[in-house]
Image (cartoon, rainbow, N blue to C red):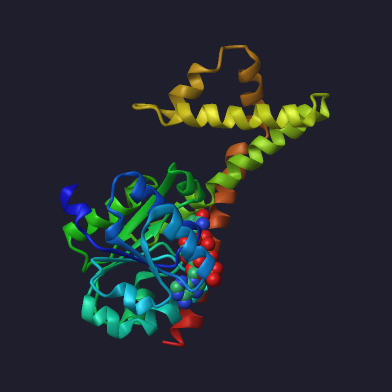
Length: 283
Ligand SMILES: NC(=O)c1ccc[n+]([C@@H]2O[C@H](COP(=O)([O-])OP(=O)(O)OC[C@H]3O[C@@H](n4cnc5c(N)ncnc54)[C@H](OP(=O)(O)O)[C@@H]3O)[C@@H](O)[C@H]2O)c1
């Protein structure tokens, strides 16, 4: 951990995700002097300086100088231009590139960066903004064990981190945890709507649904929690929960979920192809 706190971290893009990671780092005791953020948005930079006492700049190349890790946290469609413009600075500093951009593949990143750098991709999700995210990581073959540990330490401040075994698996991570918060919101929304349709005050129903989602989530991440066992524990034989679960099963919930996850992963692959083709042409 001490070694980690001596590293120099640079961020390109200090928006939602950049800010989430920086906030987590500072909250976990990482020294503010070890962090620099480049972002063209002056009010955003001022807020980062004010909130975290870190250094910011509008000059991306200046942020790269001396960096051990360069976190790429701009929108996917901005990444090709941003990375290619940094080639000389990257060749000089040779940082680990850690991209949180959805859908941009390692091959593209490496070719844009140009300098045969170690590259790691992360797929975080929105709750990372509250420090309770879930991130899938995949490292290119040139990343060392130390660099993998470094990437994991950077993202661990936003919640759970897991490594996947192939880049293709990141499409399934996207379909599961990347897009997943929306699935749970939808289910809670439908539950609330249903209760409201039967007479519960809509606002009351929404609060009950949201707190049920929160409570179930807390139980699901307890040490040694097992989802199937938890479900069994809260389902009495012949009771109300059992009636609802039987209805879900009879109406094909498992098939609906499978189709939805496949649809999300397919879309993730398609977006990766689009970025690869359109921006690769610019590189
Ligand atoms: N937010 C999430 O829940 C989430 C989840 C998973 C993955 N991600 C990934 O995280 C990345 C960032 O997403 P975000 O939600 O943080 O987006 P965001 O809030 O728009 O942040 C991007 C930041 O980059 C800045 N920027 C734009 N052009 C730049 C440039 N040329 N050089 C340096 N900075 C530049 C933007 O400034 P301006 O506002 O002035 O344009 C903005 O502050 C995306 O690639 C996304 O796929 C996000």
